[in-house]
Length: 478
Image (cartoon, rainbow, N blue to C red; front, side):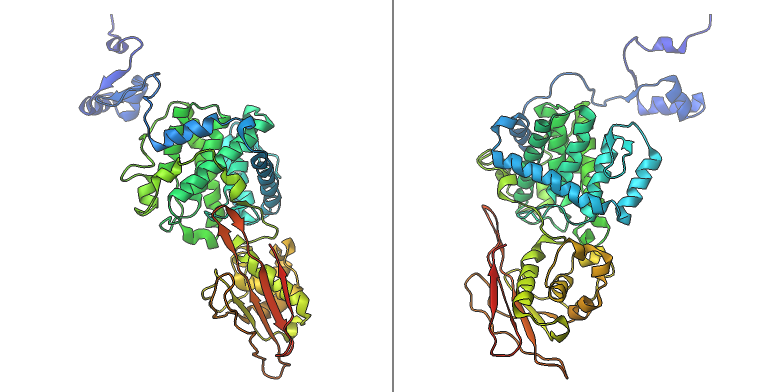
């Protein structure tokens, strides 16, 4: 009777092989693939075995955060938080609409569609049904590519893009209710905001995607019904997965970061839901996330301090009323006010001077070549505002980006040396006429700050003078 080689394996148990045994049997069987086929489940001796028991509860940061965020119910959340969650969804979709036409998002969308997979959720403005993690990734890229998504002003992060793309994708695949999705967005925003704050504003050169991914994973974990312990491990998985360099902000790398944040968040939640575990102290360990990404200056205790007293989505969320970097909005508003009040034709402007708390020094600007350069160019913002006496969504289109009138004015933008701060003395308007032109000068001042209790822009003021004696001004609260 021929010997049955499977008889050596105890029924219902995993065959344990040492490294030496595995290699010897692999050679004898004609290769590693042969031995793998003979024993479908292989575990190395000494490897940690998984079981179905719940992990031991420990007072680590990820678990403490998960216990609070996972148990917050829709009825526990302030009405303003729910209202802001709805605004995030609307803002993200509005940004994704033009983003769907941008090449960076198109490339990744096409790659994902070519790979296909289980039809779990819908790609926005396309209709393709694809796996939920890839849909979250593509939809996040659509929104971020257009640079018209929300901002967490404290952390300078587009948290809502990750939350909306992740929550809507998983919500679609699981049949979640509207209240479930809104609650997931509110609690996810809290997670991202607190982890960003714990880094004390220093991300060591990493992109804000390392923060927003935590919002996505908390939202995903809630919608997938993970336990507190599973959510904590999903947070840990995200901590050890995310990256992205801040320098990539000025290229297509920016939206690639956004896609990675959403993808990592969903993958981490799915894995943790199946029982995948990682270091329980992944956040606060000496070589953990906060230590590495915070450069040794992180405030780990702030992560769980006064949970529930306020909600970040209420106190720190801002929705863009114009495209581009949020930090430029006070300055561009001042430029619009100055241009409208002065009535100076753009062809007669000799210089555009800008000063304020957030303005240090700016080099000579160049006309932007594309949308990516335009939305990160203070020179373009101010020049377009002066040329058109307005700045809105149309200024993210090629026709405006390549406007000759704005291109001329870009070279006239300079930083004005002045004492900054609310109520500080302001320098008089400069008079620097171009050779052969009538004397013209324009000066904009933008003063803004994000207060610890929320985003509060101080009034922006500006002056535009046709002659040295003219002192007309305008003031408007942003």
